[in-house]
Length: 254
Image 1 (cartoon, rainbow, N blue to C red):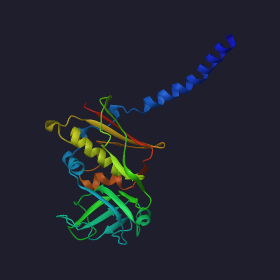
Image 2 (image 1 turned 120 degrees about the horizontal axis):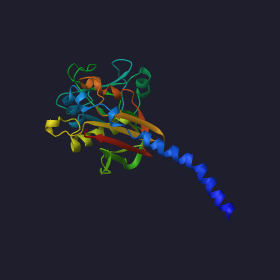
Image 3 (image 1 turned 90 degrees about the vertical axis):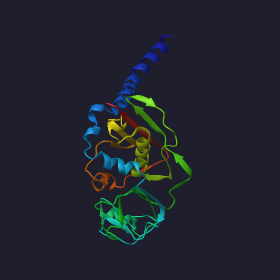
Image 4 (image 1 turned 120 degrees about the vertical axis):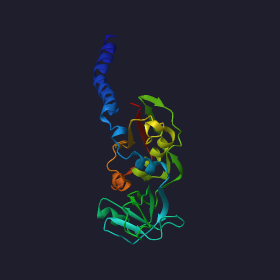
């Protein structure tokens, strides 16, 4: 009997540091509100709202081009079939090697496009996107995959529809997931709306976690005044696997 008790105590002594470290790790992962940027820090909030709220998204599959404007770009002439403003699409990456890896390849595109300060195709008829590209071949699940999302508002777990963010891609750009999530948050919580127009959220963080790969964005850390500036966060064309992916979103009203 004494031997069993001793063994139990010894096991608890050995396990406790592991449990303690696990709990501390989880506690450290939860963001501190004071470390996040404020909505009031965003100088041109309406421009951000326009980018994420008004469906200015390119979503096309199985495209191919051999054209470039600069070495770090892909140029698609006559890309838009019936758009009232744009004919061509220019995709910009952070490096020449990234652009080259997709040149003359079958690709899929999902990204926020803009026209201001965009040049490379037909003058005044070209829309621009940063990154947003994945390979088309062998990159699809049999059906749409809903991405699980944990949402906290002022540290309170809050329901969010399972269908809020979904994709059929096995490897997807973080931009696609981020854009879909921010669109949902804009519709539901008026994420980039002024306080006087019902925008209660003041701070926020979104994290994408898959197989230990963790990518995060401060929702109000907006670098620049216009889309050609603050959308540059996507020019690295970061991708993430969706088989074991989940998203954590933290919103704060003060």
